[in-house]
Length: 307
Image 1: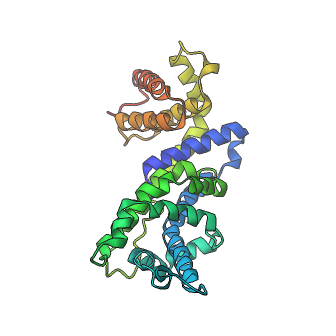
Image 2 (image 1 turned 180 degrees about the vertical axis):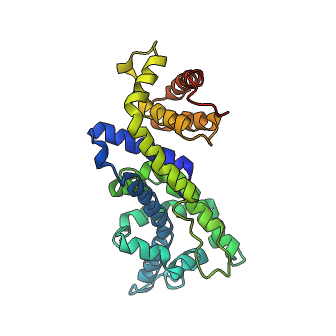
Image 3 (image 1 turned 30 degrees about the vertical axis):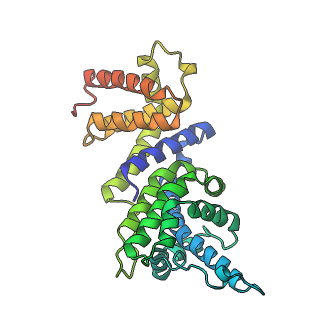
């Protein structure tokens, strides 16, 4: 699940935090693994919300049935949503819910969050069609509904955004990338599955090594790389340069120098995109220009020879 895009994001987040806190290098061992585990927790949390919202809605329907004088709709509610087989598979498989319970990630008392998500789900045209279609939904319809919810409701729910921020300071920043992996988990589901096929925390051992290597190489050499940035950006006063821009470029330089298997253009594109998201509106053009000069300097010095 933790791909190189997310590893780069985590590295920039951690290095920025370390610089702001002025932590010595011996205090940061294990920080990368903790950051990766944080994203893994978010992945499980998002999948668990599928079950939690479904069960919350089931309780609402049961409460309606239990009224002294229920309406016809309350007495015979439409159960299509609460019987959705995607939620059932995640619940019956147990891995996601057990992990979330062991790590105290979810609570049956998060009713404000479940209600806020439900209100947006109920407003979806696809949900309304799903509930009113003459033919009962099949498994593909069940999947399509939850894929729509993951893609349209989860990224745009203010209550979820506030909940993520309260649980982990990096979860909001990670949401778009991690949510894409939750979407893939649902896409992989098949009607006769007995288990949810979760992504691995690291896609490969190479990615695990890349995560630790990029983080430590950046920290080990950042006081060399930031002056390099200042030197090539001579027409820009150093003190006016955003700290986040410096961290992004220092991390990019660490990757350029220490990872011979990653082409220069891939590295530049990745960090230019990071600058668009994490820094000021004009940062991506600035980072692009500075990194182009850094690459020329490193090639001239023979410190990078890769394409």
